[in-house]
Length: 212
Image (cartoon, rainbow, N blue to C red; front, side, top):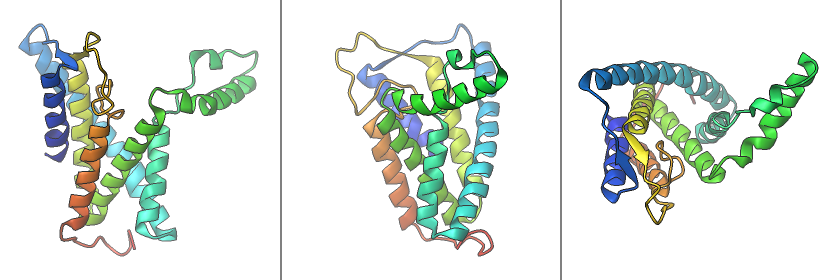
């Protein structure tokens, strides 16, 4: 519900302001097929990334430090992983060992070359902190998995159903140009509001064996 309500509302705002144009599918069968495919993708991504990033990485870091520093560090790693994409040219080398080294260097040097990198990195880190807060608040990964899966589903569906309106004279930093909204300040405010609301809610303490 959290994932659909937040990104769903943001999608509607973007449509109303004309930053993205709705492109309906050819028929309802295609739409249902895409919806089911994106649902499976969202569940798979939500399960995998939450188990690894929150269940393992964050929990391990929280045993070494306090929970909030652990949430920030683990979330920064989670965010950075989204930018580890080497260019195809990096794989062209005389030997496999040289190719591995080229891919490694290419990946590191290209991290900050992504468009709106710093805002996107901050928003993805903030998203990770919010998911950590869900985990801390409930003592379970299920809310984090559900929110993450819903966000993935909403992003993929929004990307499928809309195209960016290049005739829009002004590309506002409040809206951004990406279908996942990671390059928008509106997403920043939305995630901050979720974080504050989660922190202020009465907390059910997680098991001491998991977090401290």
